[in-house]
Length: 463
Ligand SMILES: Nc1ncnc2c1ncn2[C@@H]1O[C@H](COP(=O)(O)OP(=O)(O)OP(=O)(O)O)[C@@H](O)[C@H]1O
Ligand SMILES: [Mg+2]
Image 1 (cartoon, rainbow, N blue to C red):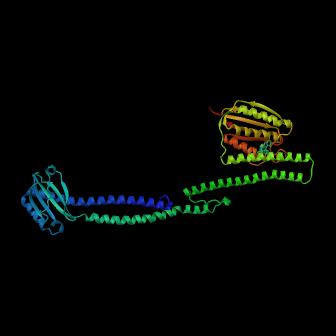
Image 2 (spheres, protein in one colour; image 1 turned 30 degrees about the vertical axis):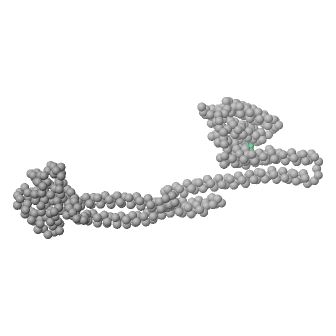
Image 3 (spheres, rainbow, N blue to C red; image 1 turned 120 degrees about the vertical axis):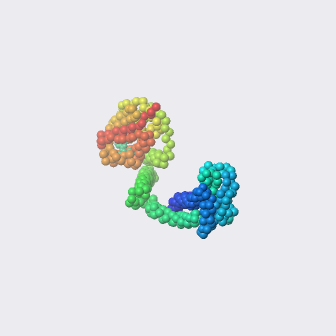
């Protein structure tokens, strides 16, 4: 059944349910019909038995007349009828009719029951395929029992009825199979179309969408969900393509610079200081290159969901103090002053390594994009359920045009690109991923040529 198509399954279930209901209906109708058929014989017998009981009460002569009358009846039914009168012990007193050899012997318990007023019906087999339906009733004075039997052909009418019902039922079930097949085919036609449309969508043409179904039914919802999924896939494919293109571009540039520098150095004989200079430049470029590769590796792992975040309760205060010390060291060559405005004990549930990486990236940016003799202010505070980190500088700032994009991968504002210390444009993307994976937010408030403030909020650890 697992290899059946939905169409076959639907048809099968439809036919089974319909067939089951039909069989139940046929069975009930047949039972009702045979009950009514038996009942009509019984009512006739009972009436006749009561007629004889009346005759017995009036006089024995009227009973004889009655029996003669029955014997003279020419129809087949009455020629196959018998009448018997039994005494209280069940002994035969009088018997008539062409079936005179047949009568129903009665047990004493049964006689007691009948004498107490109960009408007793019984069917016995007389010849092959022929039955005798017998009724036994008491006389009004309860001194005798009257038995009247009639031969009936073995359930011919119910048999014909059963045959007709079976034939009609089979026809209806075959019809319902074809009807079910047709209905399932019609209902599943939109799905067939959808499958054909989806087969034509390839990774190169993820911009294609399924045609919307006109009626707002389940098919409409399904195609809407598939279209939404295609949009997400297209976006993610485009991002991956863009990321790969940007990454290869970012790696190609420093490699090309290093190659050119080495080629120039080797083009002719130079003194030792020239070679030292080329090697120093190459080392600096290699440093930049390895940082880009390291960042790319972190982002690639994060994208693939393979970065295992080790969350544990941690106090941000010592980590923040550490970062402040490191910031002072890297800010010193540029004579940038670093002030720690506020440090409060603030517990979060997080990965210390990642939190350090995020803070270092922000600190590195603050130094990189603040000219000499600038100022950087740090603050760590806790209010209610949130921990707030501020890193504020009075550096080159970010224009309104660039602000919405600085968290994009490889994005660098035009003002910073010219700077010697320009990076790969991945630091803030990593910060955003780290903050997001700790259920926090990161935002920037900045004004060109006045400075920037990066604000990170993280949920505080709840005991
Ligand atoms: N404190 C800041 N002041 C001014 N501009 C900033 C500041 N921080 C970031 N930016 C701008 O945002 C851009 C993106 O920053 P991001 O840290 O992602 O990349 P990057 O510093 O250029 O390189 P990387 O961090 O990968 O070495 C920077 O190129 C810069 O233009
Ligand atoms: Mg950076």
